[in-house]
Image (cartoon, rainbow, N blue to C red; front, side, top):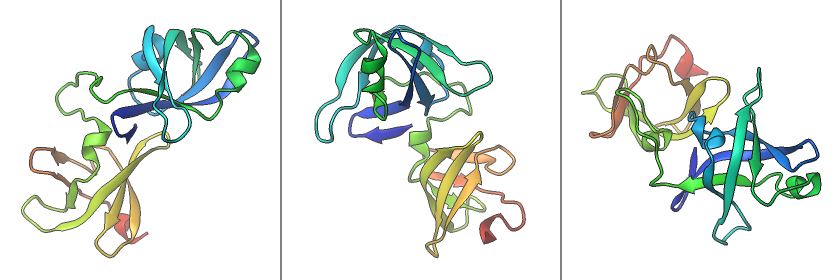
Length: 177
């Protein structure tokens, strides 16, 4: 999820679906209820303008794809749905789902120092996140080079949000790419 001031981007509208105003959303969150549970969402508008509230009526995951088909109140035909392509669905930053132990909100990982051992100096910082089938941390190393690190327990065995660091155990060559 990306953040703009007080909003979390939960997905991007990528296409119209059918003739009744449904849309396809590419999610940027691991919480399916953001697209399947009815309720208020917000939609991005022009840059600098506040998001517009919109009611999510229903949604479902497309089998075999990582896309959701969503029905929004007031969007009743294909032309209206096509007018939303490229916009983002948002929720307020305070609307974060509760997490189980050892789960993290990706936004909380941005800015963490990256260390090979918790008592050693940092080798870089988490600058961003990408979802490409697997979650990837975008890490900027101290030499300015950016690398993508798979966010899996074997490579990132420890995250300490309170102290602001994560431990990295990269396989040979991962930082040399």
